Image (cartoon, rainbow, N blue to C red; front, side, top):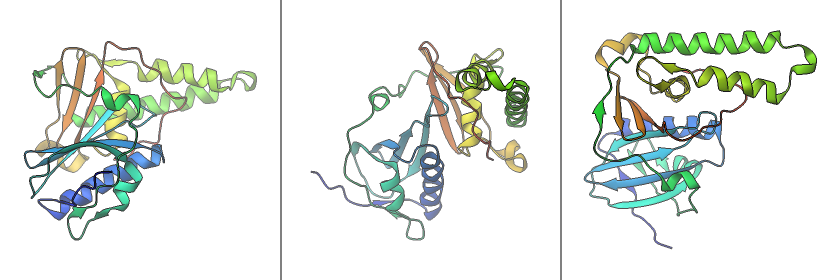
Length: 228
């Protein structure tokens, strides 16, 4: 098994930000795997939180010229991060899940117009969570099943932000993973949407959410608790 040298980040804050992302990812799936791609002084970390059926992408600047492509345990990578030292030990490779073999393209992205502001997107997520809870509470006891709740969740989170075609679940994922800019810095932290073939990518200064719009999706039963 190939042992990779420790990663040295350009700034200790890069290590802290990556640790925060991995912590959220492991919260949703303790057995989560992430695909790492390093090259050109940068590291890209791809994960797939199961509650949202999207790809989450976090990047970090590196000091060294690391060059590799490997899938590892998210939890083990998190354990190997030394925030104060600004470095991380890359754990041994694991057998990658199916999604790790289908990543968004690196080029060919074009801007998509009509994306609401970060504040409006946070409001849309909050309204959707409130609607789910209301409709769930209105279900009679005999219909309060996983199937019924899944139907409600699928209907709500499959709605798109007109006219962008971006499913609301992608925005929910961005907020839950800490990618949407908080209220106080939204003006200085632009959020943008891009498309490349069947892919959409919601990009913020804190990370990106990507998904294939042409493929069918399955949502989990209930919305995760939103985070900022």
